[in-house]
Figure (tube, rainbow, N blue to C red):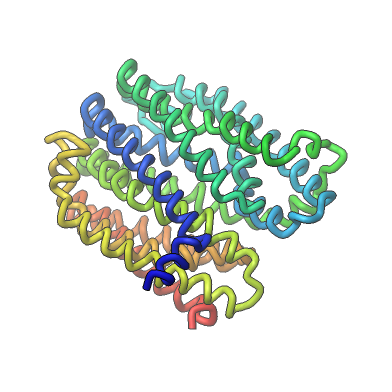
Length: 425
């Protein structure tokens, strides 16, 4: 038994998981404090506006990075020993992302009033938020580029260290902005904190890789852009269409039930984000690179079932504990105004279990460049979420949103299980 435990502790998965756990615990702890600050200073209504901006920002970020981060991980991992190919990858992606980021920044800055009316409505005047986003966006795109390179080289620990430091810096900035400027500060924090990650990323990457000398216009290769175009199509569906669906659902809640209820949904979504952080980071940092290099169904099956045997059972037990402590969780995280959030836990948790079950399967689309399959299944799931949310909202009010969430990911998991049955069985 002792030798078995030593073997587990010495394994790469255990070391990465342990460090990742520390990173996630820090993010969760900071998230708890930030949520409390949001609840106290801006309330449910302000939380709804924060949710709208988060959804919009996800779409903008996906366009600005062209969905290339998964492609960068894949191609860097495959070309690690080919210096010439790496220079082509670095240069092509750097200049492509830079051009797109600056073009998008121009659109955001010049049409800030237009974006304000579509994201927040005519009753709120936060056009300055979109001008700030225009300035911050290129820095964020660059940080995504650098992190993806580190991940592709298998520098798992460094990626986690970067995230930890970035989280701590973002925490200080967020608290200050919320305290000083209330709702405006909360919205600014969402935009500013991700861009600060660039400076942390650049410091670590510069110590590991001589990337500056590798980036030259002479190495730009359109062939790499063509090879990565399917990642952009995937990002266009999940990273752009997905958040827009959530934005439409939240606006439907605001119009038919109320802005406070939309804030309750944002609150349960934030809680969900906290406990999904562990699995999401572990999948991105550890399992995705392994799926990329898996050469056949046998190796892929081994990676997938490793996740189902080692991670999913623990996650399920954690969800059960969260449900039983939901009243205490809401009291700690928010204020008395958020008490109705406790009624949303059951279906949110059910949906999240199926969501995590499907995640490892969904990574196959990116790892193996299965663009068509991804787009079909993603559009199907978003259509189910959109239609079922509108239907259930009319019957069950705000609880209808989380019922739709559970239904969507149950169907999505069944579809992916059928699609990847050869990799599973």
